[in-house]
Length: 509
Image 1 (cartoon, rainbow, N blue to C red):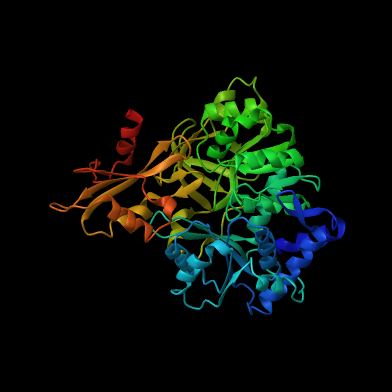
Image 2: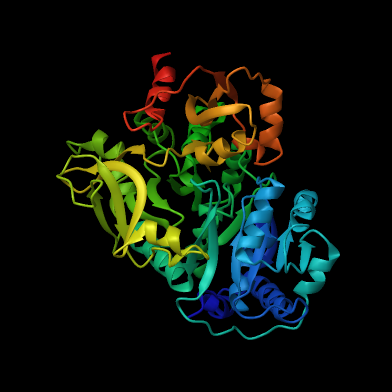
């Protein structure tokens, strides 16, 4: 079972339908898209000499080449390793080495970063810029037939920022991606060749995962010319395209709602906006519904259970007369099709309805494990249940409401940031005795990173030195926006740092 098996049929039936556009300019029909994919697949196995099961790195901003490379990897029996384009060279280096990547495709703006990263990677063969003539030469290589793979073979390794300081590669099989795709049709939308999918969020993450149900049905994929999310550009594209679906982080949706152009935006051309990845405040979604109508689907999931856990449907967003409407709107919805959910205490025993506990998921969407990390896999998946690390409760109807993140993850602008990773970098300076990193509420980004620092007795340090330490080791967006120098950190009787007490300082303000 190869996840790319959809392509020959789509190319035959919908060959002249638009496949990929950059802004309003059509680049490829599905016939042309298919030709490019099978040519690239031939180059991957021929010119680039990759063998079945090899990993291919994708370090790119949103670009038309991203989609064809994903499908070409699968067609050739290879595993894609998409990476956050904002990572630091050392972070790229770790992922490339950990996954055993041999070839990496990059956009032009990342060549310098990748060049620094590859000096430390053993067994790496080649980096290819998708904006160069060399890439188009590969596209025009002799095609190959689709490679037969097992359903359990890795198709996508999704690297999460690590709570233990190192990212972990959630390994998603062909079967996982197919199960995720079928649940899209079961729970969110039916898709046709008359639909459009607008890539407003990074393809390396959820946006790329939900490209699959749209590729399967020959929907039109539109990449903004800006390469990212720009409210004015989204509104302009809605003037041209109809039946548009796209992903929004809560902060993105709030920007759209509050933009002066929202009053005249062609909301009728929006089919679905799905959102997730961060808490959506009740008042924000109520305002968004008032502006754009009930065109929303909320998703709760993780890279380890891609885009699939609970969901709040468009119908539930529109059910204004329901007696628990606002409570449901504040939840993450009910279990998705074929997904089992439990809420448990520290001993993995189910808690009563309405009581807080850790959210566990079980379905055939759940990852096969973390790449080359059996210990982390065993800690996360127990008896088939994925321990999400998220704390919440189930109400009488089975709707799940999240209360806190037990892993203390910070979500800034829709990007996941794990404090432990930053803390370990700051602790590299011998003058730092203790440090605790937390998220501070921020209007535009949802949260921003701040650090509480305890210096060793008699030591002194300036903020610029801590900034330089971070910038030399982690991505810029993870760097603390402010440092608080304190004499001691609040701790429990067991010596655990109480991050909740640190966060209260901001709520008190």
